[in-house]
Amino acid sequence: MKNEEQLAFIDLKAQQDVVREQLEERIKAVLEHGRYILGPEVQEFEGKLADFVGVKHCIGVSSGTDALLAVLMARGIGPGDAVFTTPFTFIATAEIVSLLGATPVFVDIDHQTCNIDPHLLKTAVEALIAHDPAMYPLPANHQELTPKAIIPVDLFGLPADNDPIMALARQYELFVLEDAAQGLVGVYKGKPAGSLGHAAATSFFPAKPLGCYGDGGAVLTDDDEIASRVTSIRVHGKGVDKYDNVRIGLNARLHTLQAAILLPKLAVFAEELEKRQHIAERYQQQFSACCSDVVTCPYVPEGSRSAWAQFSIRVQQRDLVQERLQEQGVPSFVYYQKNLHLQSAYAGLGYRADAFPVAEATSSSILSLPMHPYLKDGQIDRVVDSVKQAVDGLR
Ligand SMILES: *Cc1c(COP(=O)(O)O)cnc(C)c1O
Image 1: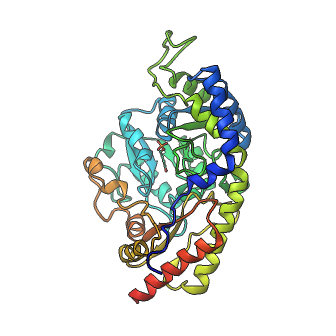
Image 2: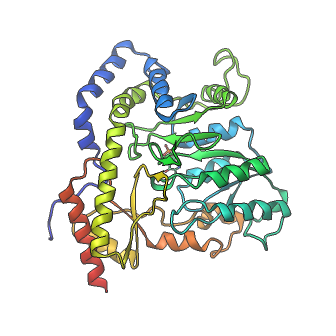
Image 3: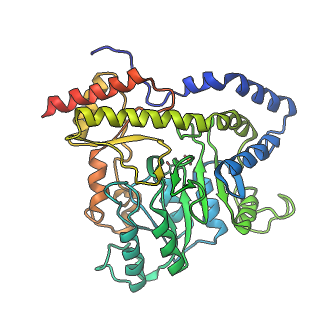
């Protein structure tokens, strides 16, 4: 098996070949009309993505991070506000909370879905209201905090358990911002990812399920007020125009060229999901046939569908397995090596190293395997074979 051709973790080239003609036409059109900032492609894309997700408003912004940030700004989140989220996510989810002077309050994940655990979330909200860190681990400054918002993450493409989260949000008047950076085309009980909270943020970073060729993102919401504020915030808090500034904002627009690139990709996005679904099923079948005792496949609850942004297994001796895969030319990636509460940037929150045992254990066993719509059956089998050899060699 040595010296085999290196597999791609995500093959953007294969996708590009499928949409090349439309991409070139779209890019050429932008070069001709020259409206590089908020040109017609941005609005066209926003309309199409809003319809695709089934929400009233889509506002294209400069990244997934800015999408999250703009929504919290629109809600006036700031110092003294507590925003509950998972420690098992990309830093952007919590970073924007801190940027606004608010405080992320972490809640452990469910051991099956790897998403925020709604029961623990309830405990954490009540612990914060009672200012009682004996009830649940709280950040050092908890005495100064009031619960304001929740950011559930559609991790690896699977939406979080939304019904109990929304019920809790209603009970305590909390705002729910869905971090759908990895979630588009995922589904929760018949509702599409991107429509699950009061507003959602998504990302078009190239490696995301719907990626552009640079940075990009969008805010999705049914709420007219949030939509109108985010539209203002993405252009320096504009009023009638960008020289009339009614609030503090950002320079956070989706580029016309990126919207032009996203349009043909959105046209094949639903088909690509079917392909991802097939790949995930094949991975699952092969792993259950060969090594279900040592490899745990992703869990998708009844009524949910994953967007399969990643196919992430859990395996013992993960680092050794990863090394062996590397030797076989099979790329893999660890999302996420370090929980957010253990990052140096968050040392000030004072969380202990065993505060969130499920998230911490998951970080040491998780391993994402190659996943993209153009992965061939033979390549899937090769990945599974390599994993099997690696775990057999370690038994
Ligand atoms: C990628 C990602 C983001 C940030 O998106 P960018 O477009 O890179 O700014 C936020 N949250 C999660 C969960 C992500 O995976």
